[in-house]
Image (cartoon, rainbow, N blue to C red):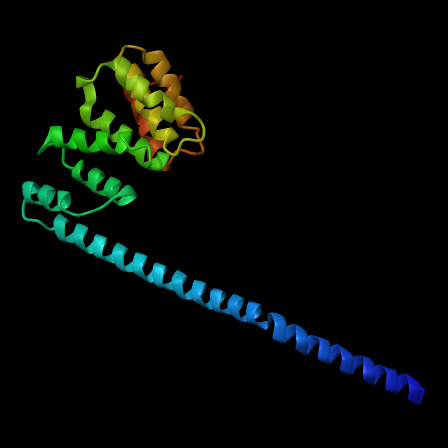
Length: 215
């Protein structure tokens, strides 16, 4: 490389540094602001996460304390007194519905609150409907139970196998034994069903059609 080329390179580098320095002086505050926003945003996110964790811990502690109440009435009163919204309220209502023998009306009312709350994910609402059908039993007409369960039994719903199982029992109760057994037979081969559900389905088939192996 000649001396003239080296000199030109040095001048070009110097001009580049001067231009960069001017740009930094003019726009450097933007970079500083971006850094501040990133750092502040990270701190805010961590604070929010810490607050949510603390709230969840307090909620869990309150629930466990309520469940340790000496009798069902005191337990229900303690659970009902825990402030909660959204999915935490759904948890409380499902817990309030866990002892229907003690207060059937309160159990059904708690389940209705969850099932009717459109702001909740489908899983919570479906679980409440399934529980309500189970608790209410034969006091609800077959047609109403079928209407409640059929939307939950379509592909994609979170508790589809359980809804199918309950539908089969409703059909057998209504005298539609062949349809109920066919549904149970399909459930024994359903990959989404749990081992317990498949076992219950086979036991029900054996009870309704003994010696038929589901045929």
